[in-house]
Length: 290
Image (cartoon, rainbow, N blue to C red; front, top):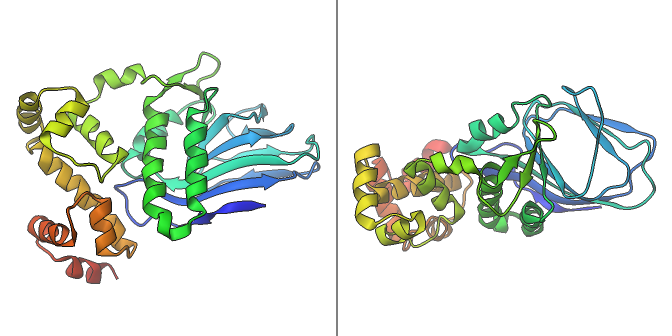
């Protein structure tokens, strides 16, 4: 028995992360079978209640027990087997997300560049689990919940990249915690701004808002950002908004809904900004992608 929704078989764009499918999966495993997988998309699975099953990535010469609150991040092309031959006849519960990471693909691939070819996350505080459950639950609302689902996906990717630390048990294992990882000390101002935007694209961004959230003064943010990246912080926000807008236009989302999701005041503000920056109207853009 399962509940959830498949939004798409393939991602529509490459900039913003995009959920393709999210599912709550309840099942009684057959205790006489193994399965072999080699997906061509990213998968994040999160077991909640599993009895005596195990997985074996192709790169490892041993089986790994599947435990609750121990999530697996599997990149495209990663081969693995699941073994249910010693399972009991008890009901098992798990959540799955199939997704495209957009601009974060290289960063996630670095997590999976290890002896197992995938990454396993210990989540004893249920920080990641709560988000995965939320995204699978939202997906039951179907296409109407697409924007909400992808908002949570951005938070999940942030957890994987920035709230996990390497484990001393194996090079493919990391631990999720409520503390940001030490790697963030070296994060650039542009990366910080982009991650802040992805947390909530509809937020009321302004120089004062950005400065407060990025923990710098208003003048420091304006001058340092412009000198370093050749655009103002607000120009960067507009660029990120329009990147998101393009992806939603390609999905056929109504312009009014896109305006709210991307942080524009209304449809007119979105259409005016889109034409000013891209040199095309939204109607022209949509005709070209059909």
